[in-house]
Picture 1 (cartoon, rainbow, N blue to C red):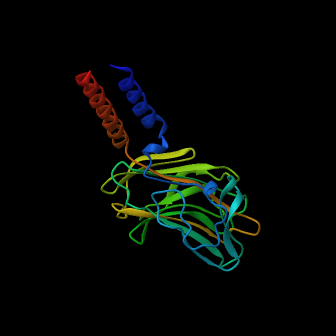
Picture 2 (cartoon, rainbow, N blue to C red):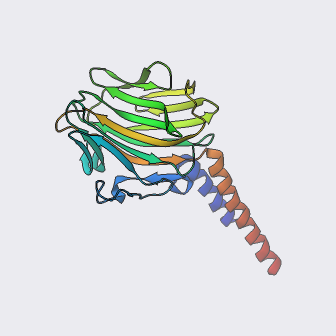
Picture 3 (tube, rainbow, N blue to C red):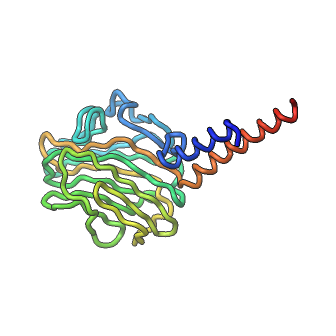
Length: 243
């Protein structure tokens, strides 16, 4: 194997093991923004439609310091009836083997509820949430709530990932919790949006969000690398014929 092909092989391995940005379908983070409250067409990163928002009462959103660091996206809601939510549509629905991931976390007080929804053409089909008074995060995939395996952890950045396995099957990781090959009651075959929310969280509290990404199945990354290998091999062969 020549040096160019060896370099390409190393690149493929790195993409698979490290989830390199070149293998991402979509990506965005708070560091891409100066403000999250003005222009209704806020849309940085790639692979997503612009952010959309909904809120009521003493609630809102901002870029800055949150429970998971600075800068990050922050939602806040203070009082009964107050809520703030932010939504992001994917350019393409999750395909088989694709993974959506995001970092989230909350400050100490949750009087109401914080969490995220995965949405299938306008219908919520999966919810990850922490409800005030509970000890653990919970999941709902269309049936009854069940434990996510992650306990209350204020001011802690927790990475959530959701992998679509095909049909109504999915796997997830969230902090110390995980689950493989779960079967959702909801139809999860065309998840194309994520929504984040804070409902009556409490005065001077926030729900932090950052580092949204959609990552393709590993075989897709490998194919990208193999294409590079093939192109490199063809170039070497062409040079040899010309010499």
